[in-house]
Length: 174
Image (tube, rainbow, N blue to C red; front, side):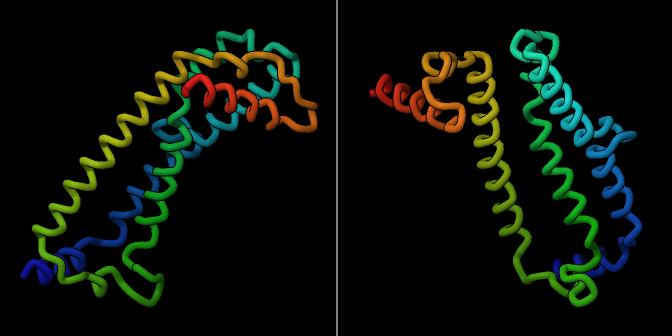
């Protein structure tokens, strides 16, 4: 019965409904949207950072670095908006021109779908919140130890300094 209802609802939903969802998601990435273009903002952050670095004033530019501590989720938001555009943009097809969403409905019960959705939301919400708390804690703490000292490695081996800092961090953890 539920499968029949789902098929009928999918027949009634016009393809044009998904156009507004796609446009809203694209506006998050491109200029002129509700969020003023996250993709363009990330490019601007990179260009300004490169300019300040070339003038050797990047690490002294508090006006630039302070807001960046809050800009780290922009990449995640851009990825999610791009995924949203991809998934809704291909509707009403699962495989474009071959298999429609209407024909791909599986015989899974409503209770099973609801249970898995609730568990998915709970697990990912807790993992995401812990990740945000941990990243913010790391940002507030800032670099320490070998990470802020001048590297002993040759400029042609930039990862050697990071390896030294990682070794020191592991030694202090023991």
